[in-house]
Amino acid sequence: MASNYDRNDAGRKGLDKTPDANPDPITGEHGAHPIGTGIGATGGGLAGAAIGAIGGPIGIGIGAAVGAIVGGLAGKGAGEALNPTVENEYWQNEYRNRPYVKREAKYEEYAPAYRYGWENAATYGSQGRRFDEVEPELAQRWSTSRGSSTLEWNNAKDAARDAWSRVEGRSDKASYAGSAQVADDKEVRSTLNDLIKICKDGVYGFRTAADKVDGAYADLFRQFAAERDQLAAELQNEVSRRGGDPDEGGDAVGAIHRGWINLKSALTGGQKAIIDEAERGEDAAVAAYRKALEKRLPADVETMLNRQYAKVKAAHDRVRNIKHSMA
Image (cartoon, rainbow, N blue to C red; front, side, top):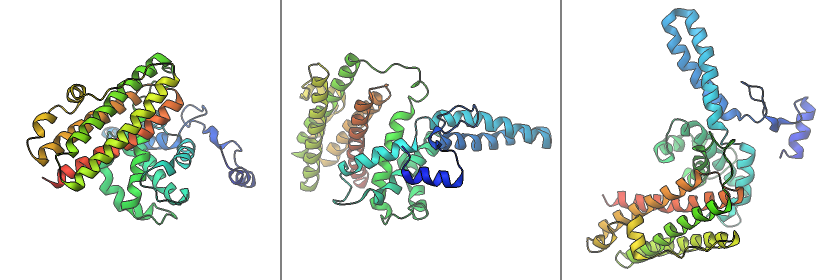
């Protein structure tokens, strides 16, 4: 919802008093997302011009025009997963729950980092690129994109990654979200129970591994186990709230079957082998959350899973970085 300042400012300038309508520049319909459409139109226009160059100057013009339309449609599809107003409101309500946010920090300090994450997710995500792949580029450009934020990139990148992951988690389902039906309670309960198993696998895997690694890593693994236990409890509460029987999960056989495949042998293979297996288990957890978020879930469930996914992904990346540091 636009603020009073936004509305008054629009009135003074004689602008459209309902800017959130976002008329589609291609179809004229309301609800277009200029980030996605603009990116697609620019890329499509350049590609069309290149192809049209074969036919000479006239071909360049026609190719650019057609390419812009086609590219705009493609970009529009990617951009439909992203509404800046919705993203900003989400993070304004959610940011204090994030482990990287300093106590008493104001949202305005992190807002540019969140915006940086979701905008670049729309740009690079449509190219199939991941956050870790483009993070060096984002780091270089942060100083000119940070606005009023005093956060250095090392402190801002977790927020940017969070916002990117939220968009990434929804982008694959954007093409059918308008026509697909929201999952019913039975499907929701099944989806959540699958994630309970995955979270409990992490509890078992991290606790078991913590007994076989050095002190600092042991403390971190126990922290991850406790966090994963909290996620499982939240999922169990939601299953119960929806009239189902929450899965208890968490046995050794299940953990080995679903992700921590070589844990038993890794325990006798030294610290590096255990870290490798922890990453394998976290790969399975990330994949499970992404699969769940591909479904069209009720809004409150999707919000919860996006928040949980960010924590799971952060743990995964931490384990991966430890593994790479030991190579």
